Length: 280
Image (cartoon, rainbow, N blue to C red):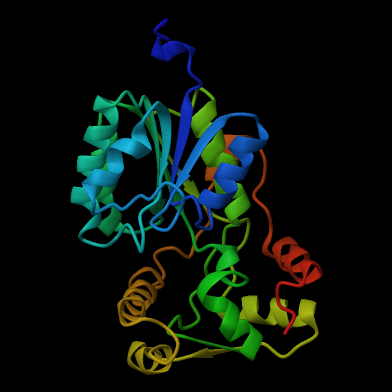
């Protein structure tokens, strides 16, 4: 029986959160390039849980590059210890490159970022603005369909970023040289308030979609009807923390990483509407 050296095996690209908004797209892109991909999540074929270390080793087998997303949110105090322990395990297992999804303007994410920077692997941090895809997947889809976005976001503008741009940057960082030791701040090309975003979606779908600004307390009451309690708190906290004006500016990360402009919200809305994402 001949023993194959590890170097003849394909280098596996690990995607933690492989069913998520960015992870799914990263996994699709890597697969389309013919690369070996292991997309893991709590309910996936290969189960992965940030808080169950017995799931780490099987996920890391043969992995050379890993994309890390933390659920529900990297700002969670439980994130940093888990991320630090996992990156240490990963580097011991032979992982050479780590890419971390982080939040733009969120100091609560910095301890997790530091863990990745200090891991000994080549690292890239991808700090992102609000995802455009929050409007057509996930927790804002139902409010858009109902025609009313009730959020504690005041009239603070946000440079929404397309998750396809995030995936493009992540795939570049995982597969190309030249991104190591870099923190990219990703945003879309213009600032929009939630009211303007709702109006654009309404126009594209021919429906009335309104934004109703509320206080965090009112939001908690409304959201309690359709979100689990821990997510209600998370979103109430997130809105009041990062939508205080600190992120009301554009970042150039997409162009830095890819040499092109980021996708615009209007294009996202048009494509989602054409695809039937908001058909009632």
